[in-house]
Amino acid sequence: MKIPLDFNKEGNRLSVIATVNFSGRCIPVVFIVDTGSPETFVDEFTTSKFRILTKNLQLDHYMIMGGTKIALFKLGKVKINFKDINGNLASIDFSNLKVAETAWKRAGMIYSSISILGLDFLAETKLSLFVNPSKKEGYLTDEI
Amino acid sequence: MECQKQLQLIEKMDKNDELVRKNYEELQKKYKNEFIAIKNGKVIDHDTEIEKLRDRLKTKEKDLTTILVYFIPEKNTVILY
Image (cartoon, rainbow over all chains, first blue to last red; front, side, top):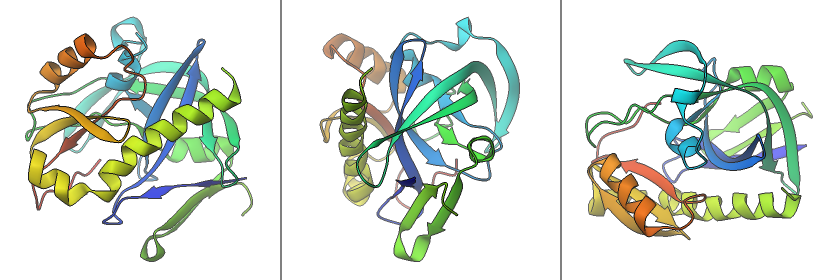
């Protein structure tokens, strides 16, 4: 299995689009791939479109990201679906997805809510990350 | 949900994300320090305040599923996640 990742034009952002299946809902998410993050989470703005709000979820713990303290709430077991290199759906179980509390402020000051695919996802799913920024090539794979 | 529908959702989102990936400089010139909402690969609304943008989207749009909202910082600003 090989899941291609997207580089932005500047080559400084690596992302992947997925759908998250949770409780009968199918939530499209743009994940930033960040091996510096110990956590995988979806931002509340995304989940709120599906009436999944942090006020209804159990607080897991806090995280400080870019100097901003953000609460993470348990969403739990989900299926995350990606489009693989052949255009087929690759469905992967993940046991511990969280929702990050929205920390919206006025534009230009803080925008800290984002969805992150962290190292915990790679560890649990036993996927490897290959990145070659100079060629703007990146993918997740179980073949290494 | 069927596989095909999930793939269609991913493809729709990819089209929206692609607009940002490929046109970042142009977007920065037009919408610096604003939040933009993207649907079907086009910017459909923008605002300096996310709450106002979100409220307008809720009123105007029937389906928010694949609408992407991004913050576009001014030039020489990198977002560190």
